[in-house]
Structures are given as structure tokens and as C-alpha cells.
Amino acid sequence: MAAVRSRLQTTGLSPEVCKILLASWRTSTQKRYEGPWQQWASWCLERNKCPFSAPVADVLDFLSEQFNNRNLAYRTVGVYKECISQKHDPIDGLQLGSLPLVSRFMKGSQTISRWLCTLIRLAGVDVCYTGHSTRAASTSEAFDNGVPLEVVLEAADWSSAQTFEKHCHKRADKAQFAHKVLGAVNN
Image (tube, rainbow, N blue to C red; front, side, top):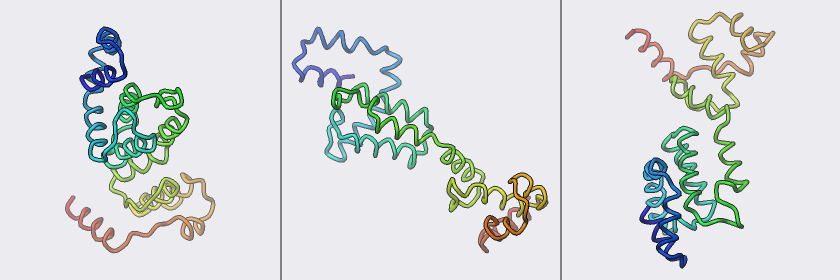
């Protein structure tokens, strides 16, 4: 909160007003925001940006890194967004977290596609699949692991085995095949 105190004082507010404004954050909120703020401030410092006035594009790049590189959960990145939003200068009279672009970003990060891709990766399925191809990935994996074709077709609501074979059955490459065989032998 020292950085926020300094920032408030540079805007011409008296120490008494700064003290009252800082008291508006509960101790638990201050603690929860401490780590995210440190990471955001460090990220900005590395890029010669001011954490209080960095452009929205930079904030979104930072949040995107939290999702993609650090694989943080939606709720955790929401804490990062709120932390930055509470301390960032308003943009066009709006708090950063209220900007339509930031709201759209957060909404997009919570898609089923992202969730499915994360689960598929955690399950050990090849990461070449996208959210759009998860149906093919899941049915191919099921079939390749011994689920009868009729069950796969019914689960995916397909009536034709030819449709599955032509468009959806993703064949494992030789490395995947060897990995599966060795994995089965070791079990």
C-alpha cells in the first residue's frame, strides 16, 4: 500500500485524505492484493510502464500471461484484474475493470473451450487439439483405448462409422503409439 499512498500524495491530496482513502481497503483485501500487485508492478517495471497508468492493452497482455503462461484459474486472474483496477487511474471516467474490453477479455477467458483444452492436456492427450476439435479428440482417444465403435458413435450422436473415420478419428502418430504401448506394458 506504500506505492498507493505515494501515488495518492502526488495527486495533491493531503496526508489525512490519503489515510482515509487507504483505510477503505480492509486488511484482508490488502493482503490478497499484495502478491498480484507486486507481480503487476514488476511486469510494468521490466517494460518501462507505470502500473497506475499503463494502457489497457498492457493490462490485458499481463492478464493473458497469467492465464496462458502461469495457467492460473479464472477466479485467480479475476483477483489480479480487481487489484489492478482498484489502483489504476480511471480511463475515460471508468474504473479499469468496468471497461467493456476488459469485461469481454474476462468473459472470453472463461470459455468452455479453454476449460476443455486444459482438461484434455491434463489427461495426457496430445495438445495439438483445440477447443473446436475436442469432440474428435475425446472420441478418438476413447476408441483407441478400446471403447467399442457403437458406443463412440452413440455418445457423439453420429449415425455413420464412415463420418467418424473420415472426419473425426485422429490417428495417433508413431511416438504416441509407442508411448501408449510402453505405458500399457509398465502398468
